[in-house]
Length: 219
Image (cartoon, rainbow, N blue to C red; front, side, top):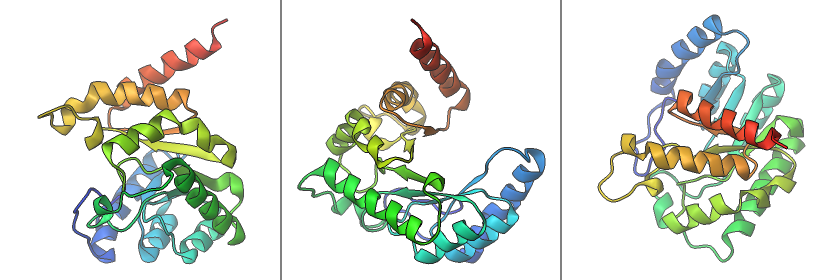
């Protein structure tokens, strides 16, 4: 991704975003031709050029993907991640009031799955993300993490992005020091049915996944 989505992050132009990501997509596609490349963007021109360059997944964290992005994903036979959020990075942390967090997030994602399918994206090419850290309080993030199985009957794969998120921090910790909590949270996410983990610490997460898979296979 070429544009930060952390709280209060400043937006960048489509041109700047493309300059940041397209060389990386092309290089990754050349070096690892068989590995899926995911592009984070909410902009149609960036999504189009990224797909042309070899991206195979568009991760739209806007919460309200434009139908044209769904159509691009359809035309390129790509996959799309739809994520729950509210507002923008500048406003989302002021929009954390929910009557029923779990049901509202689930209903939102169900609507987005249907919208993607209605635009011609096969359901198996849609991936959901409950949006940890996006328009959620610390307590709400923990509620989502504890109840990830609640979303599995939506019938699509689930991406979970917990790595180094602020809500995992203990007092006075900086992001690199959230590693222990991140690994523990990722194990909880796997137990909750996560299909894809978005991480920074790849090698350590791989160890967690190997352990979990071996544990699941044990008699």
